[in-house]
Length: 327
Ligand SMILES: [Zn+2]
Image: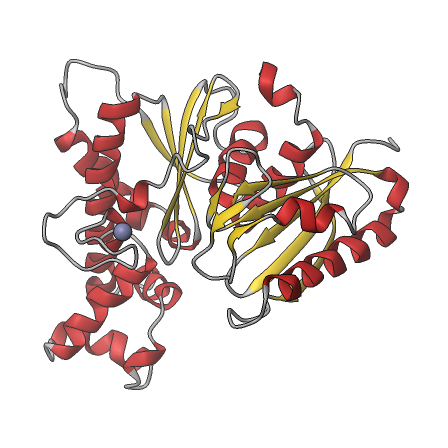
């Protein structure tokens, strides 16, 4: 009972969320701070992380915490120590583990947030019992994680699973990464909002219900609001989500051709739309699958751990760094 608690920290663009996670993947204590804005130096963000870790350690007693895992949105090197690039933070080749390890007495590991999420969903969530799992997190962009036979597949340089930047439309929408036509420009929260905006600017009468919901202030339209409108039966909102689902299905069919997993787990904020999104994804996936009708088909399911997946996975990966090597 006393041992094996771990702390997980999920660093996003707006919040540093921390939790104490027990051996069953339950979050027993929580703490959070706002993420210092991008203009602040890396050491300010690190100070914030140490504050959250210290608060959590005091809540349960520092001697009961075996490790700290950090899940960050960004490219994390395969050594699980260095953040190579984080779009929402000032980290560029930042030696995060080394910086934090000077101030925290237990072992620390750093991971990409989607890698942490796929681990959590496999161990405690939707993908339990599966051998070949791919996680797709739909937020403002697309994050990805690959788990095969109990091991997170990080790639040679730690950057495997950046599915969001696979090109699906040659010459398509410009992406933050510098390329055009990336998958996340078509199947993400940002894509959903952009499509709604384009209906507004076309003065489409089909968008009047959505426009009423934001009292005419187009800038206030968000993904969750579109999802709510779809749940309430608004046909335009449903169509927008189905369209995102279609693009999701196209990309998943490509991933199936490359990896042949048994299951795709769909997480992230947009996945809260459930079957309003996944029904069209499944349909399009079947239509685009190579060798369809003559091969087994992967399942496509919603994630179960919600916003906690990154935090739980980061904690658990840090707690059992050796177990992951052996499955
Ligand atoms: Zn891109």
